[in-house]
Every structure is written in C-alpha cells, then in structure tokens.
Length: 91
Image (tube, rainbow, N blue to C red; front, side, top):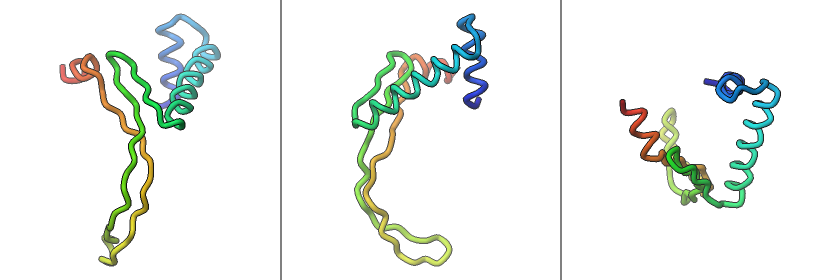
C-alpha cells in the first residue's frame, strides 16, 4: 500500500473526502516525524512504538572489492509492533 492508497482507505473507512483524509494522514505523519526528530518516542497502543536509536560507528567491507570501510555513527528510526498488531498479522 502506498500513500495514495492509504489516503483512499482512510477516506472510505472514515466516510470523509479524500482531501480531508489526505490532510489527516499528512498531519499524523508530520506529527510522528516531528516527534522523532526530537528523539522522542511515539507510542500507539495496540499498533506499535516508533523510536530513535543511535548506531555506533563501525567497520564494514565493500562487497565488490573487499576494501575495509568506516561506517559513521548515525541515528535511525526503529519500529516495534504492538501485541495487537502482532497477533493480527500472525493469524
């Protein structure tokens, strides 16, 4: 499912126009992104938790040449699914 399909599904499920559904989806995604940018967590009970973790710098290898590389430290987004979502997917 891509973003436009999600907007259409939200519009149908909520009984609203696609324009209003797009505003709602954009607002939710924007709020999650803004919270993660501050390195805070976003917990949606039953769905899951978005968080930011720091990856330490490490050594790696270029698979084509075998040359050793330095991979810099960075922050990445992590998602841990909630129990209800996990049970729903497992069925």
